[in-house]
Length: 131
Image (cartoon, rainbow, N blue to C red; front, top):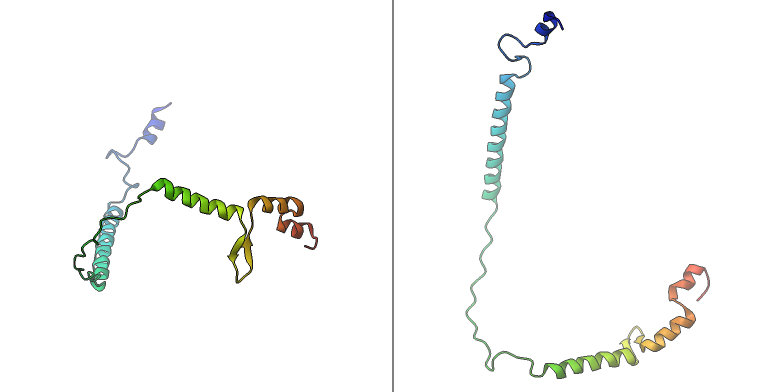
């Protein structure tokens, strides 16, 4: 490599390339940034001055607890057995779910037998047959 080529690659004598960065553009960008921040703060304060604070709810007088203490579950096993018996009776029995619209519930075993013989209600529509 010759000395002439090396001399062409070196920057100006000042030690930097003056054409890459403009001080004026940097200063204008900084001023614009701070002006934008200031404008945003003014807009936020303007909006906050227009919004009225929510009034506090009126304080309620203290209410004493009812006499007799808290209602506790006296016999949890009996209550659980009662709930399970009700659920089992509904699963194994017949009854109305909505009598006005004539919707009833039937035992699970009977429902499974009906589905095994007739199929799902929407399968007939998929196959193009009549119900």
